[in-house]
Image (cartoon, rainbow, N blue to C red; front, side, top):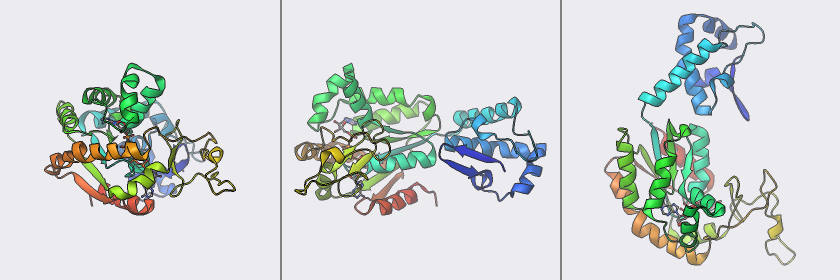
Length: 318
Ligand code: AP5
């Protein structure tokens, strides 16, 4: 049976194309040149969605030794289809919006996995710059630790460069950007250059009172960005000492066993400043986009699974 492969999953072609093709009839169908040309776009879209190259997508049928999916002509056809999508179709440009601790970093990776477009977190990019002590990192370090905003010029420059990269050709999910009206207008202007615009703003709504517990209980795995919480999403290894206090050495990443850390700005005092910046400078962006009919509200003050269901609903066109 033909399948498309991803790192950890195998997905039937029929389930991706949305057609109910059985394994037996599929072999016949794909040997027919006309039908095959109809299947190519589905294959391409499937590959794009799963982040697969055309060669990963193509697999020989072991029983029939059918090779219609093999060979450079097919790869060329798929490449051509990919090029058409990236040249003529609009990009899917989303903003994950919400206060510190709303769940942007929790749900962003799931949207990324589902849609196959990257999550671009300006916070992660800036923290990487701080760790590497680049010029940008040196400028951003103190202001970030105190919970202030890095200059518009720096973050707009970072995003301007990042969205031209290959993995953004079908779209991207912005997390933590734009954070001021100046940034929102700069984003609109750079998208307008290609005739594009923001297609969705997912607003995660959470009252300020619940954010301190979320922020102060968060631990992260630095390399992957995986986020944990001592109460809401503890790592499997988490233990308490005999006195009931958190055993810090037990805070390790579920997947790698590497130690977890807390962010320098995840303190109650920095949160006060971050929240004030959010209400004063970031919230006005919502009215800027509301007129475009792209803002979807999600109640993020509920269990993570329920939040995810609402996020899925907000992504759907139905
Ligand atoms: P950034 O990294 O963007 O931080 P933030 O916006 O403050 O957002 P957080 O990452 O803190 O929260 P989140 O919504 O991702 O929450 P998470 O999902 O992890 O920015 C950091 C700094 O960089 C800024 O302060 C600024 O200095 C600078 N910066 C970045 N972008 C900038 C820009 N554009 N302009 C200027 N400066 C910029 O969830 C939090 C915790 O809660 C986790 O532990 C999670 O497990 C838990 N949790 C999540 N959902 C739930 C739930 N439903 N129930 C219970 N717990 C939950």
